[in-house]
Length: 245
Ligand SMILES: O=c1ccn([C@@H]2O[C@H](COP(=O)(O)O)[C@@H](O)[C@H]2O)c(=O)[nH]1
Image (cartoon, rainbow, N blue to C red; front, side):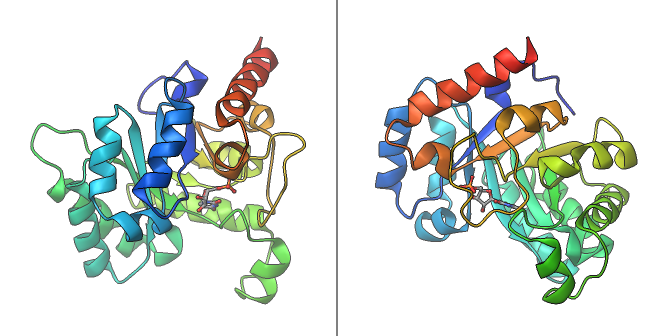
């Protein structure tokens, strides 16, 4: 990792999968003082535009802009140049775009980052955590195991000069073995015990995710869809801290 983050709260990213600023504000009111890092995905970014990132930064939060860029290298480079100007802390591309696209994305991000400002972390999405081996083999037409494909994408991502990958926590030990400990792992597919799996297939609990070596956890519905989001947040932090003690 670029930074040693000892407080688990700095490493738990809450996915704000909402379609309006109003819903975001209501959610943040309930989580105020607890969360440090949030994720803006396509639903919110397409609904509210760049203003949402500026708003979240004004609230003192770190922001992962999760738009999963996947296009020809020139377009990916331009997209990253524009994204760099938003002031996000983390952005991403699909590793399936290949090394030329990922390297171009990194160049665009560097060019778009203001002088003296820190470049956002650039992360490659390996295989979506909703994708099972069956879907990967028979629909996406990639043979083999998910683990082998994820490690292959992680190596390509590193080769292209990116900072890390998005994958399931289940694959983190293999990624770290192949790409090194400092290669950042961002892991959705987090389900505290007793929560609905929904559309995710490659899941772990928060405690397991940290135990497996994940650098950042992405947690959405388990927190934002709960009747007491702050209570769920606190119970996750407590469970992780107890597990590490
Ligand atoms: O492989 C991926 C990449 C991104 N995501 C995103 O993470 C959150 C997960 O939300 P939950 O409600 O905790 O399932 C969501 O915003 C996805 O777009 C992912 O799940 N898997």
